[in-house]
Length: 168
Image (cartoon, rainbow, N blue to C red; front, top):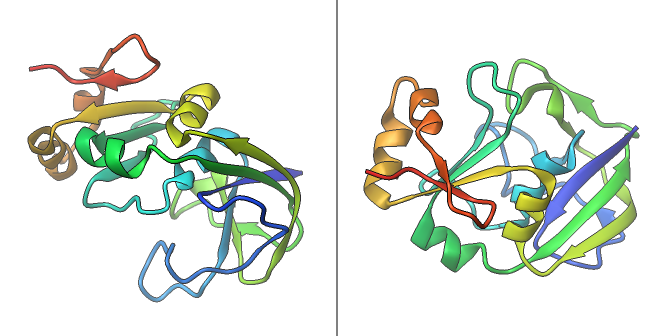
């Protein structure tokens, strides 16, 4: 099985475990990969964090959503990166945490099989089917703090460029 890894860094020949991307503070340094390109593509934005971006699935909706503060994303996400393919050698998944069965990880280096360059992380996300929803800072705070975020996602409307927004 081939897995995907998104990075802002181009030209990698191997993926090395990193401290900066962790699901929890006590997790060891890991290489993360995904079973679907659309799950890996958002990670081309290396500065993405929970203060301005939320990525995942909601309820039983099969779509993946990246909900972001638009001004911050436009500043941080305008650069591109690479989508790498790696063989599933030594990677495991923990279905009950993180992105579930779509997310794989290991604590060892992983050789790169191929690399797909993208001049824009947003273009890669739209291409692979990530539903990118742009919000104002106030809307994002409401979304992040909501007990059930899915009703807010359902209010999103297409903008005509492959992205979505919530009006009102």
